[in-house]
Image (tube, rainbow over all chains, first blue to last red; front, side):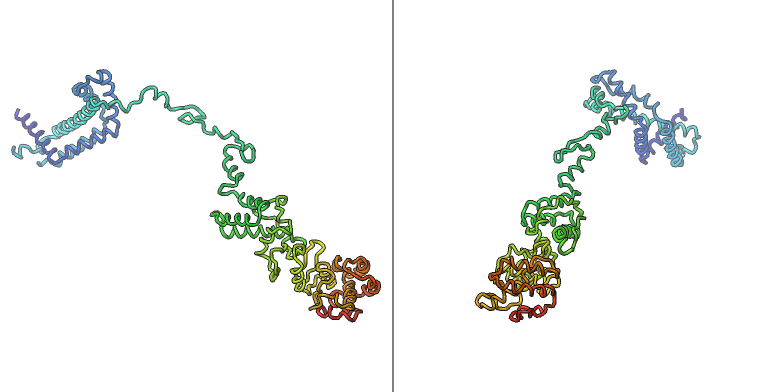
Length: 99
Length: 373
C-alpha cells in the first residue's frame, strides 16, 4: 500500500511538474493540432452527427456525447500521433528524473 | 514530501512507461472532452448542422463526369463553329474571329488602319478644311508616332503629286505603295483634278520650284500655272517674269525663267499673244504695251508677231514653219491681212531658230529680240 501510495505520490508529483513547467499545456496543444491535421476531429464530428440524429437534436446531453465519443476517439488516434506524444512525455520524464 | 522519496531514478522503466501512458491517456481524453463540449454547444446553439447542404442542392451541383463537358456541365468549344453576320459589311464571320473583324471593319479598333482609309475617303467629299481636321485627328491619335505620321502624310502627298504630275515632270511616277493599301480606283477625284485646292495644299510642303510665285493657290501639282484661273493683270505679271509657255499635254503654263531651255521664244511669244490679246506686252518689251498708237510700229509688230504666232500650238520642233505660215493666215490676233503675204517667205527662216535668234529681216524689231539674244 505504501508502494501504491508511493506510486500515487509519484504520479501526482509528475503531474504537478508537468503543469508547473507548462509542459502539459504544450502537449495538449500539440495533440490537438496533430489530431486535426490527420482528420481525427472530422471523423469524430461525423460520428457525433449520427449520434445526434439518433438521439434527437433537442435531447442530446453532454454525457451522451461523452459516452459515445470518447471510446471511439481513443481508438481512432493514429499510431504516429501516439508515438510522438509518448516520446515527448518520456523525454520530459527523463529530464526531470532527478527532481 | 521528501525529495529522495520522490526520485524517479529509483523507478524502473516499466513504471516510467506506465506513467507515460497514463499521461498520454489523460491528454487524449482531454481532447475528446473538448470536442464533445464544442459539439454540444453547437447543437444547443443551433449551428451544428449549418454547414450541411440540403439534398436538393446537392443534386443540382453534383460534379459532372461526362466526356466533352467540364465538371460544371459546360461545353468547351460551344461557340467555335457558330457564325455571326457582321452588321457593317453583312458578311458571315466565324465567332472567334468576329471581334477582330469588327475592329477592322468599323475602323475603330486599336490596330485598324482604317483611319487612314477613312481619311482618304473623306477627303474625296469634303473640302480642304475638313481634311485639315482629319489630319489633326491623326496628330492626336496616340497610336501614331510622329515619324510614322510624317511618313503617312508624306506618302499621301507623294501619291497626290505622283498622280497628277507624273507626265509633266516625271517626279514621282504615281507611287501607289502606300501602307494604307489604297487601291488605284479609290483615288479621290481631288487627286486627279488639277484645279482642286486639295492638291495644292499637299504640295505646299514639298514643291521648291514654285518659289516666288505670286499666286500659290492656283498652282497645279506639276509646278505649272493654270492660266484659266488667272486674271489679265496677274497673267501679265506672270508673263513678264516667267516662260509661261502652255504645254500641250497638261494645258499648264511653264513656270521657269524667261530663258527656259524647254521652250522657244516663239512659243513664249505666241503664248503671250494668245493669253493677253494682240496688244499684249511681249516679254522683252519694256513700255511698248500699246502698239496701236504707232501705225508703223503696229504693222511691224504685227508682222513680227505673225512670225512667231504660228508656233503657239506646236511642240518645240523646228520644222514648224509650214504650219506657221498656214496658221498665220488663220490667226485670230491679226488685224491687217496685207502683211501676211509679205512675211510668209520670211517665216521659215525665223522658225528654225531656237535659242540664238538671228536678226530678223525686219530691222524695226531689234528691240524685241534684244533680251533673247
